Image 1 (cartoon, rainbow, N blue to C red):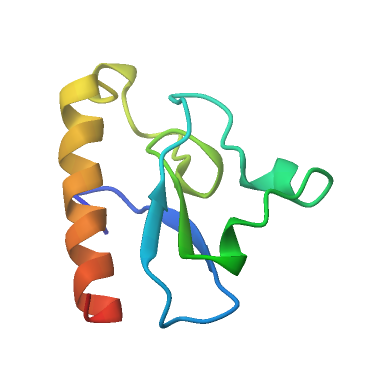
Image 2: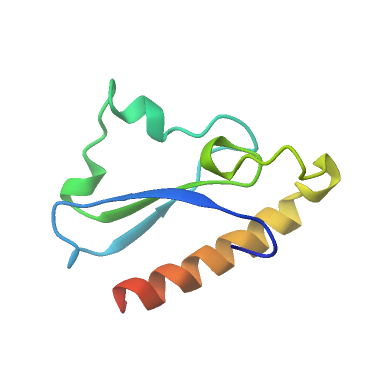
Length: 92
């Protein structure tokens, strides 16, 4: 739960001791993680990658979230919370 909304993410890494990378897709809209199966980017060779699906997208979609809530300001606040979560989770 991030800022009152359930959020989804995929975390992938070849080595969780690698630096953590929060991938921000160009949302709101279609998250890009699903494309990496057909078009791999191999970021997980160098990083522990968090593919966060922003509010209103993919795993973070919720039909009850009002469109007025999906603002640049709220996406930035959510990204800060996700970053804090990753810092704590991976002790980085």
